[in-house]
Each structure stands twice: as structure tokens, then as C-alpha cells.
Image (cartoon, rainbow, N blue to C red; front, top):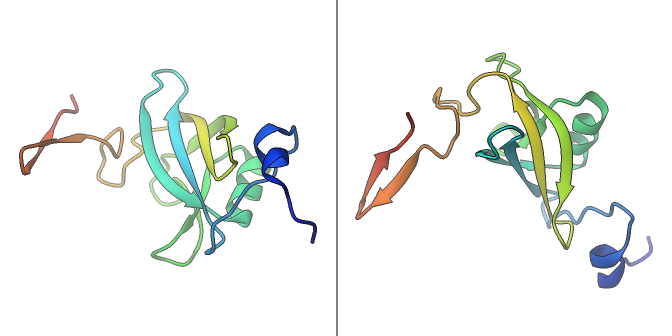
Length: 125
């Protein structure tokens, strides 16, 4: 396999995802309408391929050790409108249309609390 140069990855026009030593990269799901960060998860090659093929966000579940279709049990799918890539191609921004809450807790976003001193305070309305 040919070594990909830094310049190719950062300045080129070819999609060359840079997976970490565990075969994963970060995927950040952002609401296409509000631009709110909904969740952060990991993708492996299979999850990325299934997401691109189906238009539904798939991730690699580290706890289950398998492919995970977001919404497979809850019905709260994330419809992917666009995939954006960071400068060195080791993180993705999934611009999505959520079909319900993104967080497994039922919150709209997994980011529903802020740090207040040493406590967490909910700010979701």
C-alpha cells in the first residue's frame, strides 16, 4: 500500500480518511437546521461505507464491538445530508436531519449539561 503524504491528505481533492490505530475516526453529528452538535461517536470503515450507501448515520459501537445504525432500536435516525471532513481527514462532521432525540437519554442532544463549579447543570429547554 502506497504511503499517503501530508500534502495529499491536507491539500488534495481525494477522500483519504485517516483512521486511528484502532481503525476508528471521530464523527460529530450536527443538526442541519440549527447547527447544534447532537452527538459524537466513532466510525470505522464499515460504518462510513454504510452511512455513505444508505444516507443514515452508522457508527462503530465500541461497547458492543459492532456496527450500529443510529436509531435501530429507538427509531430516532439521523439522515445525513452532507459529510464534511477536517483538515487532516481524521474527523468527520455529519450534517444531519434528526428524526427525534439524538441522545440515548431522550435529550435532543448529548450535550445538554454544562459545568458549574464541580457540578453539572442542565440547560436544555
